[in-house]
Length: 261
Image 1 (cartoon, rainbow, N blue to C red):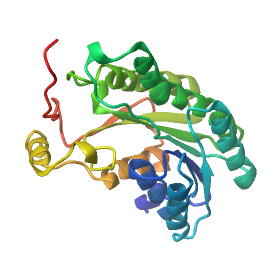
Image 2: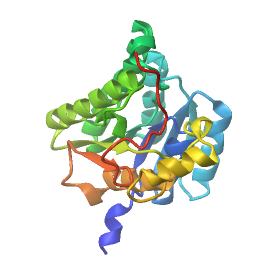
Image 3: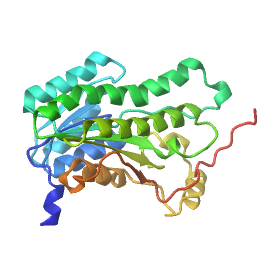
Image 4: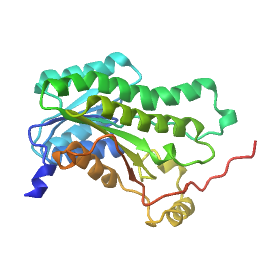
């Protein structure tokens, strides 16, 4: 059965930022398809909730508190996964983000922090996890990038640059780790999560939907389904690719204006 290639039974997936939103959605999708999942994020209560939901699918799920700003905590997540399960097959680098701000109001520290949070963390998690994949049956790294990495829009100098760099890192690591470890990214459009919620009211949401060819904003499951595909044997001939899951967006659907410099 061709759908069997989406199964992840017996495999082990680490998902960062798994306490809510896209990270939680990815962890649950993989658990539903049989994977044991390691849910990593800063807020213990949130990852415990995700792990409880994942366990309901019959797989084992661990909640491992982790601030990806701390190298030692990232390394500990990988070590815990390897110790508990004896293998690592999938890594979803989801933790990241940076608020929009005009370039002339973005400090050097803020710019560097955006890069650290969105790119360096994914690089280090990959460095820690990939040796375990190579010691086993190979594996898959899925980086959560953003449409902001390819669209020119005011207010996204830091975040957009960081996500563009993450997409470039994806291609470079894919080239280096092939054929045994695949590395891909998802360029995510505007998705209805708690991160977007502070910017949305009914009027703003309607404007964003009107500017999106599919006439709706994304749902967490839209991204989780692509992550599942990239993590599973269904995508065994796919590596080094940036999959655009954005409702068909070719120009920004961000309706906010920033003051002229």
